[in-house]
Length: 414
Image (tube, rainbow, N blue to C red; front, side, top):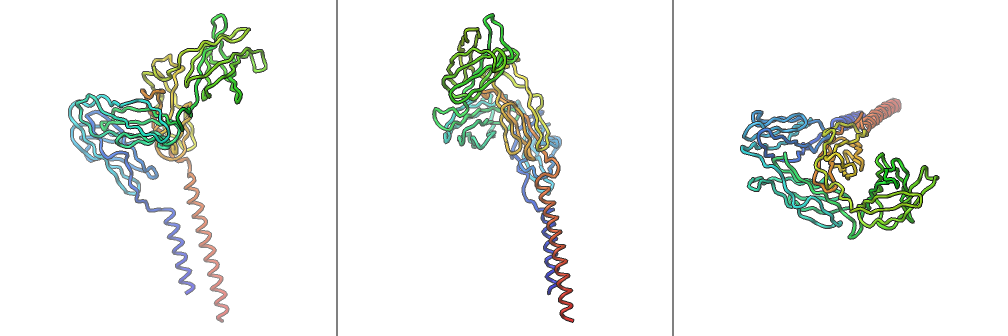
């Protein structure tokens, strides 16, 4: 019985080791859509939600539509076919592609392009393709950050937590989309994002003072910035109220002049004239940051990174002189890749994430798809290796133990 028990134990350990190394997966690919309507020469991308395994695409009819290894589908001729996605485990998922005749729609219209909600509020966005006589029953809604706001496929937005989320609606014709920038606040009248102060510093001769140290101070905080080469400065995330603005002639220990200012709105613009006797402050109108952006051109629209890598998104605005325009960066999946307010992307876990770049009003938006692969073995890989070593050690200990026990029992039986 001892030998049989030992054999059963060893077999169980081996089976556990095999199970850990070759786990059985039954997950499907989890494509982001089941149907796409396209017109000849149009393209769109199918996204795989299950990125834990390698996958490949194929089409059932290459005369109607083709697909590349990234899931980009291109319509060729009128008809219907299936795009098959196969995981390395053998599991498959599919998306139907209908290629239609005629002229494609030219755009998608949303009932609004920006919204401010209080946590718990609901908003229904209405969307339609145009021209208005175009029949397209498939419109896909997506939230860039579902921890801030979710959206149903009927367009109902639910505000969950303070933050910013971009709600995108895309026609099944997929070459066209529209977006609404949603800001969620914790309570009525409370600005969770703070105010922004933009200014330009001059001397009494009308010359812009570049690379000059400026301090904005109130009873609770003091923040220093330096003007740029054009004499411009910016203070972000400031509470509304009274402040002292100080301009230094050199370092913070040098001579300075000051003036009392007031931040009374979310975005304030001012012109400051520094003189020996003080600072003259001329308040401008509220800054409508992002409102004049007509286009955003990204340096790259796809990026491949390893987990832990960083990448800075660079862009060009049209008109080109909008250097003060506010640009907002958001990630569709911060568990895969996060992005800060300056456009620095940090790759976190394996998968795909869209980094949205938009003006403050959400009327113009571009996205950069970030593909993250696990660098080296990753935490899971090392865990498997350690588990295997532990199992081997346990099997060795058990073998020695039972061999020694059998030897002792043999002696006792003599």
